[in-house]
Image (cartoon, rainbow, N blue to C red; front, side, top):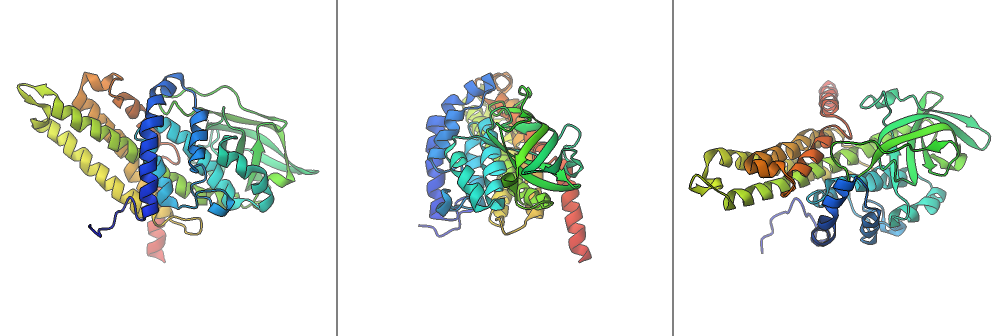
Amino acid sequence: MSDAFDLENPTEEHRLLRNTLRDFVRQVVEPQADEHDRSGVMNKALLKRVGDLGLLGVTIPADDGGAGMDAVAAALVHHELSKSDPGFALAYLAHAMLFVNNFYWASNADQRERYLHKVLSGEWVGGMGMTEPGTGTDVLAMKTTARRVDGGYVLRGHKALITNAPDGDVFIVYARLDDQVTTFVVERGFKGFSTPDKTRKMGMRASMLGELVFDDCFVPSANLLGHEGKGVGNMMRNLEIERLTLAAMSLGIADRCLEVMVKYAVERQSFGKPLVEHGQIQRYIAESYAKTEAARALVYTVARKVSPDTRNRLGTDASKLFAAPVGKEVADAAMQVLGGWGYCDEYKIERFYRDAKLLEIGGGTLESHQKNITKELARLVSG
């Protein structure tokens, strides 16, 4: 047996997780994907089944009910789910990364006691409110405010483009307190909090998008997450694993589209020979394969250097900057190879094509990654 290092499965535990997840995706996720893309409704029952596998807390220590695994495992889960249903994978990311992972590493024992079991089981759906109508990538320009009152805080403002907003039971929300970003845990039932109808979108339709509205919403003192004025630290730590897992989603899309493209090209005849023997088609396939393998190497290499105690802004920005376009580009190549059949829904390519575009925007635009990487490299050079 070869002793070669497996980048995607660095330990036997990772390998077992991937094998289990592949079976689950094939048997459970794949059959429901088209239905929920068409309906534009999140599959909450499926989220609970993922919870039964222990994966809603994949990065949470086992002593607190999680899987006790690392960022490689987090990338692995998003990678495999996205081979069948990127829309559901995005809902999972908003729950397991943007809420659960973020909440756990910033919370105290009382907060974990109150919330953790509900979100690890999938009984409650979580999300995170950061983006606002006028401040997307420029997140630190947020206008949502918090002010102190007896027993807690009052939030006023408006978040937009929030994954899981229409479905969520609990949200991590960032607001300005004394002009410093502070983090709060907001339950759906809090007075003054509401979520209007879902926002319609191009792809990722199996995850619902919407707004969070705070109309003098009272948040008790016990729901301050971390410390006043320290929200940026919570935010930046979680953005790193978010960007990594979004990059892994793009890799999953690329893997699936490449597989469909090659199979179709081998089976389809054109001008008296298999499509795969035409030079133009060979270019689409070969370049798609090279891009996909390069993305795989970068995503899993970076994943090994991400943890709650390890900052890797440069690596996570680089992984998403490179990998995010790969899913879209490979889906586009697959559609070109399949021609009219790729444009129709039989082979699923049109769904993956629609889903892939979001990964160049969500969790930081490509332009923001270019800025962050350049800024960090300049800082390193300057010492």
